[in-house]
Image (tube, rainbow, N blue to C red; front, top):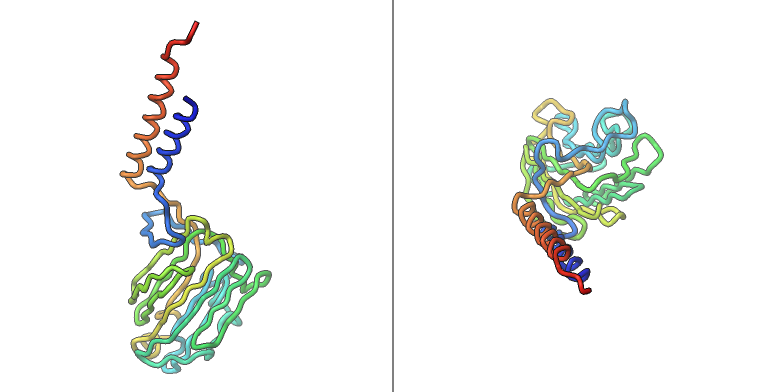
Length: 231
């Protein structure tokens, strides 16, 4: 009887919890995705990577990393020059202790332990595209997505096992539709990468299958209690 009970419980869990790929696209509801707070509570900017169009007319990508990407010294301006409408290849490698971003073959690196650090914490990567920027996310942690993004788009890449505990690499392309941050400079146009925690809520169908499994388990337990015992 114990074997039957264990088998029923295992069946309920297997049916109620479908296997997930290493990384999947999700659409969090309100409050289901929380961006990780930066190390520096007074730091401006974001926690991760920001690639923006830079000063009006300059056509230099500004690439910021870490917890205070808008602070002086956190941006590499002029590291890469963008050409209107031309796709440029990028890769982002993010681990628990360091982060590196490569655009057009030139790499920006930030290490843990300083104000610019951005260690990976959480199970989800959010990519956002703003205004005149475009991006295509080719792969995340070896999983092919080939997702084209335009201004206003947000994509959430979720890893059930926290990216295996060793981080991930994102590859793709990005481009600017026209020059100069709509003439005002700064972070009006660009692509941002943030990490955070996605608290997934089981879908109704999953809840239903879980309840059926628990019901089966309970029924077997009752039958065992009611079964007559040998004298």
